[in-house]
Amino acid sequence: MLQTALIGGNIMSEEHNNFDDNIDDFEDSKNDDVLISVSIDLLYDGMLVQDDIYDSSGDRLLIISGNTLSKDQIDRIKRLNSHGANIYVTGRTHKTMLTKRPGVGIESRSKVEEATGYARTKDETFELLREIADNKTVNMESLYIVLNELSDHFEFTPPSVIMFLINAMAPIDEYLQRHSVNVGLLNGLTGRWMGMPEDEISKLVLIGLMHDCGKVLLPPKILNAPRKLTTVEYEVVKKHVDHTYDLLSEFPEPVRLAASSHHERINGEGYAYKLSRDDVMLEARITAISDTYDAIVSQRVYQGPQSPFKTLSILDNISENGLDKDVVRIFKENIPRDLIGKPVMMSDGTIGVIRKYDLSDIEHPFVELNGRVKKTNENLYAMSLYSDD
Image (cartoon, rainbow, N blue to C red; front, side, top):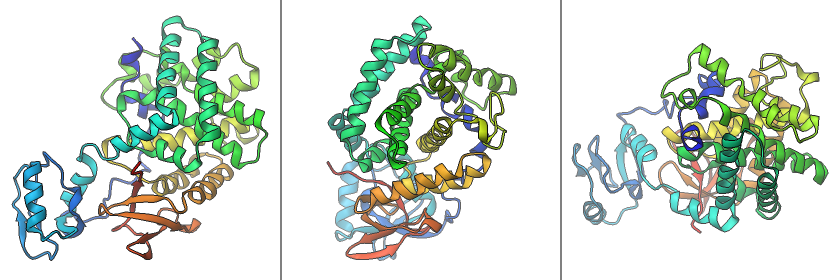
């Protein structure tokens, strides 16, 4: 069953074992016991209070550790806090708020997905992949329905909205269909940023959409293994690129090669053929970076939301592992530019607006908060793109 094959597990992480160790642990720099000021709106119904919580002055105890909060209690706490916007919590409690608070961004994400047509395209992609798993072949009619939908959304949806959709926290059991759509969209954006003609951009979108279609032919017990893959299992999973090549038999050879070469690296250390820079097609190099960007975002499903600025910082750091730095630079230069003037949720729960950025420190953009523009840092950072639609 495809439903099983698409659910979580190593279908998300198998191909990225080589850079997992490069991704920083979530806010390790924060001292778990130090009190920090955060928005009171980060409190949520059902939250288990790990450590004492203090009022906006930092002096008055509001909540004793060990309590499980209800909505009524949160309303009472807000009154006791004299309607102050902030409270003081430990770094440990702050992490819990960011990573376990249910429904963060879900409602706004769903609305944007419906309004842009992303939800429909994602569901149609699931049906396409299900058909491939069942029939061991690509239904061209179904594929072109999805491609037309995806092309329409790409043409009429602003880049900032596309990035919101890609970076929003999403259900793990929809990983493969979302990943396929996201890589197609990122490929299309990259082609646009590079000034490619429309037919080349359309080809990039197709390659991104289908790059992982071979995974549906892999054994579900390996894809869903709730642990890191063994060496033997990893070798089996790497075969998905061969399956992708075979499934795209109706397409021109350059499309088949590009889609199945997204794990090749320009330093010759990728797979399946260990190609070097001159032998890795540009379309494959672009897809490798789109694939990696979305994989970094998807890693956050267990840790909490993440802004494109943090994702770009990680991408830049791991580009040493054989990604095309010229294409990575295109991501770094264009994604932040399209986010200028857009709202973000800050790590303390407040809402700011992106005003400018520094390519030498892409992780920490300048954000307007309460009428003042300030550079973000490891203690107050842009946590995620925000939409109140």
